[in-house]
Length: 168
Image (tube, helix red, strand yellow):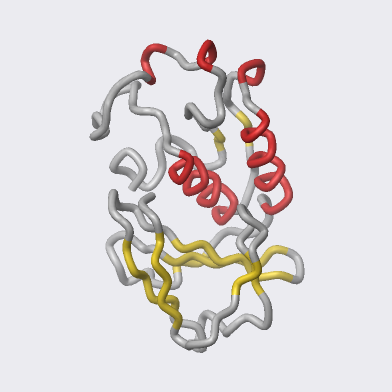
C-alpha cells in the first residue's frame, strides 16, 4: 500500500521523511522525487502528512518493537508530537485484520492494555468510504472512542459504521 507494498521495510522502523516533519536541510536529495512511487528503488517521494500518520498508525497497530530511524537533528516539533503518540500506543501483541479476506485489508485491531485499538486504512490516492463492521464476531461496538492523532472524540451511532477516509 505505501510504496506498493504492505511495508516499506520492517514495520517497526519509523522513518517519517516529510516536509511537515523534517527541516529542509534534513531532507536527503534521494527523497526529492515526484509521485507516483518508483518500485524496487531505494528512493521515493516524501510522505504527505496523511501518509506519515498512516505509516505511524501501521507501526502502532502492528504491535511489537518500535525503532526510530530518522535524522533526529532535523525533526520539526510536529514530528516529536507524532512520535509521542507512537510510543504511547505502540508495543504489545500483534494485530488482527478484521477484513482479512481482502487482498489488501483495510481494518485492523489489537488489544493495548484494557483498550482495543482500531486502525482503518485507505491505501489509495483518493478518499474512500470504508464500512467498519461493528457488532460482528471480531469487533464489538465501542462505548467511547477517540482519534489518537487529533484527540477528537468519535461516536458510532450506526452499526456497521461507514467513514470517509482520506488518501493514505
